[in-house]
Amino acid sequence: MKVQNSGNVEGVKIALALFLGLVIGMLTLYLLGESSDYSNLIAATIGATVALIVPFWQTYVIQISKLALEVNGISRKVSDKAKVSLDEHSELSYLRKMKEDDKPRFMIIDGEPKRSLKERSVTLDELEELLQRAKQDLKDFPEKIADRKTELEKINSFNTTSFTRHECNKLNRTLHPEIDFNQANVEETLEQFKQHFEERLANVKEKYDELQSSLPEIERKVYQIKSDLISNNSYFEISATLINSGRLNTSIKKPALFRVYTGKENYIDLKLTLNDFEIKSEISPNSTVVGTLSSADISQLPEEDRKLINTYWGQSVQCKLFVEDVQGTATASNAIAFSEGLYQKIIFDRLAVVATNQNM
Image (cartoon, rainbow, N blue to C red; front, side, top):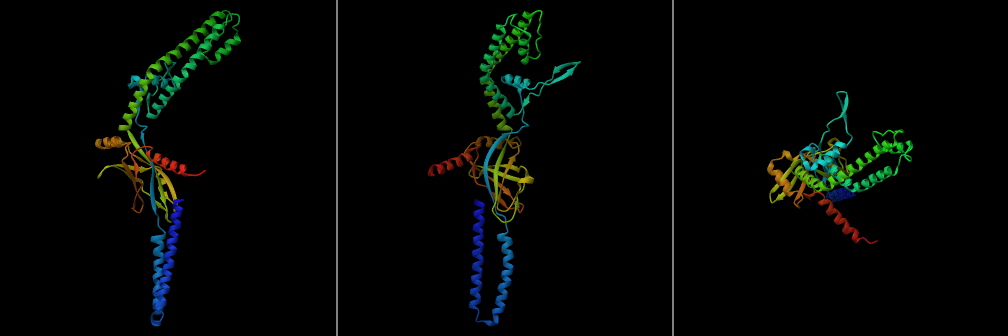
């Protein structure tokens, strides 16, 4: 809507300029009308001048692109190339077991299937996902323990007379491998089922006790690992809206600059590149394009710059994005805080004020 209004205003300006030119031309002819010897020459001169000015006006005033840039937000992410080894941290032993239990793979060695070692290095996202699963396990374990106790009570309720092959088949639905029904010795079959369900109950209780005691350490370790990765192996993503309110399409170049102002005449520069450059770089007349720009991993920056970034990240210091179009014209964005989510909060607060002032 903002772009459309800008176009309407520009059209009004052009119409007024043409009307003013027409009035001046007519006034000039009227004042010089008595000089009949020069009237034709003057008219020809004015016509030639208009003929030259109109194409110039259209090319350099009307048919131009007008680029504006607005930063929507900034986020800081850890590269997927930064891996965390679950074997190197004893506090993560429970998470390591969870990872090993995920779809175990087997390989044939000496003619026998043996479990292969899985990759136990994970990304930060995978590590946080394992932590969330562990928290959910802690909530689910009491119910699982109750279910195991119910299963064991059911086994104990059978005797050699009431326990039939049909009951054996029902119990075997969840077992791998299954327990064979021994018609000649039903008591032995019952004992095997009882032993199996006792082991299942004991296994769930053991995991529950382990997780209860280790979860606080797991959370602290994951937080520490995340902080270290963000400080040393993170990169920035900036979401920006490119607005072309002109009447000619334009394109921006792939490199961009993100400057963080840390004080008077002090700043940090982050070099960015436009993601999906082939799609996002061109902006049609009277249109907008929302794009994402990414920095390199901050591990590639000088140590002093990394320290400054870690110091000022999350602070209220201002920063701006700069892009350049194909004509070599640079455009600066609005200023936002060097903090994730703070700019969005400012917008929400403004909208809340407007909503409060609205009458129902």
